Image (cartoon, rainbow, N blue to C red; front, side, top):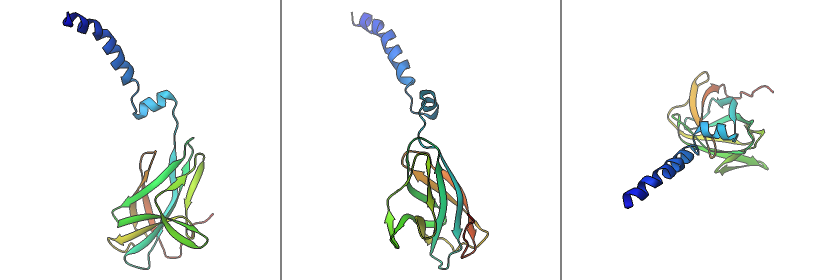
Length: 158
């Protein structure tokens, strides 16, 4: 009797398994379902050649052409043991746990505003050097960026 019930339930179980397989959370599944989410790109990245041997700043712009906000939660690099996100308001710098990249908008990290602080440098980078960084987001895949070290006092055009 038990064998007949199991055999009769097999088509139902198989159909359920196939339906669940179609609910995969992989990138192909979200594309099929029409989910958009954040769509991020990075431009204008640079690190000014630091004055001190153990600390530097980092700047870039993240553009989000998607329909969902993204949260930049951390940045990692072989150059620094610790990289923190900072916000500047009313001439006061403070460490923050994340920075928002709004849907259809941008997050700009620049001198005097939001920026990265790279601490405990493995070496003092010099102008012309390239530094690899990885940006980590709460609801988007990480983005690898090659960041040039620019001369001290460098300011991007525009």
